[in-house]
Every structure is written in structure tokens, then in C-alpha cells.
Image 1 (cartoon, rainbow, N blue to C red):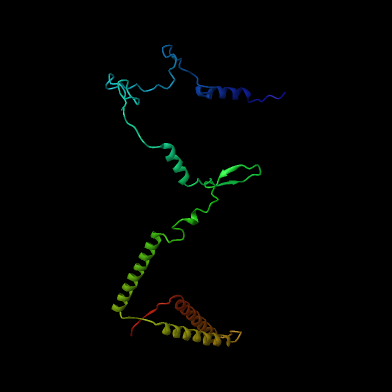
Image 2: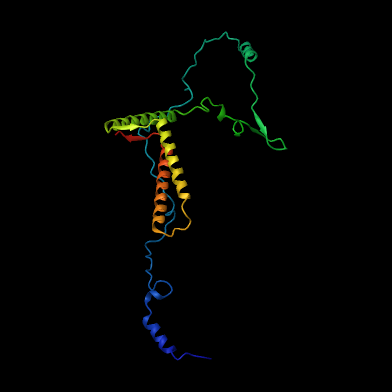
Length: 231
């Protein structure tokens, strides 16, 4: 069979580089001392020491009467318990049967109240009523909005700003749309082939005007309250 020519040299190199910790397990193990032997019940949990009573002579209080106690004698009652119980039963309201439900063919019965089938939630007194914290939050929001509007109006009054009315806003919006239609109509009348520089410049100018008008129309439609500088 084939045997490598480097086998002796490899054996020498392995024996040379082999260390103590490269064996199976530790090279040297400390021998346990015979004095530290395992004692019986040493690994079981130990209970804390029992506390001593402060007064060992004092006896605990008894829940039964003492032998020397005498019952109270001579107390009599003229109450007729038979008639009283009969009247209570006759005049009392009959007990209502416990509501149950059956979910199997075998007739197994279960209490209905704890089953979750009764609409208890919608029968509550506060069902459908707006919670107090929501009402309080809405009031705070309205108050904050009013304060903000008041502060804005005060600032605008100081800065000599004017608020557009609804009619002025509609008129301004209609004018912008009319201008956009005129520019768009002029844009559509442009020639298809832009072979000269003036034609290209005219087209770019119309596109810029249309974009600006579209932006102004969008801003006015989104904002119902508009302020302008008072000239």
C-alpha cells in the first residue's frame, strides 16, 4: 500500500507542537480532599429558624365559650315563627328561573348570563352617549381655535390686512379660471412645429402662465379664508 514519504517528519512536528490542553480532558485534575465528603441532607433546602413566642404562658383566645361561662336564662319570645315564615312565603315574589341555553343535541345546559350571548353592552345607561373626555377635548379644541382666530385677526389688524369675503373670493376664482381658459385657448392655437426661437419662447411663456394660474386656483379652492394686503 501507499505510504507517504513525509510521514516521519509529520509525526515529529505533531509531537513537538502538542500541548497539555490538547488532550481529551484536562491534563491534571485536583484530587478531592477526603475531609470534604458529601453529608446526608446537605443539599436539601433548610427552613428558617422558628420564632419564639413573646409570652409562652399566654394561651390563645378560644372561639368557644369557657366551661365556667353561664348562658343567659329567662329570655322568651312570643313570635310565631311558623306563621311568620308562612306569610313571608305567601307574600314574597317567586324566584325567577335562571336563564340557560342549550348548544347541543344531548341537552347540555349552560348559564346564559356568562355566555356572552346577552346584549348587555347596548343596554347600558351610557350606551351611545359621548364620553366626557371627548366633549371636554372638543370644547378645548373649539376654544383654542377661537383664540387662534382672534390672535390672527389682531395681528392682521395691526399689519393692515384685509379678509376677502365669500363673494370676493368667488369673483376672484371665476376671474382666474377665465384667464386660464384664455391662455389655454391661445396655447392650443400654437403651431405644431416649433422651428423658430420666438415660437418656443412664446410656448414656454404660455406654459408658465397656465401653471401659475392652476396653482393660484388650487390655493383659493383649498383655503376658504384669504387675507390680502390692504393697499
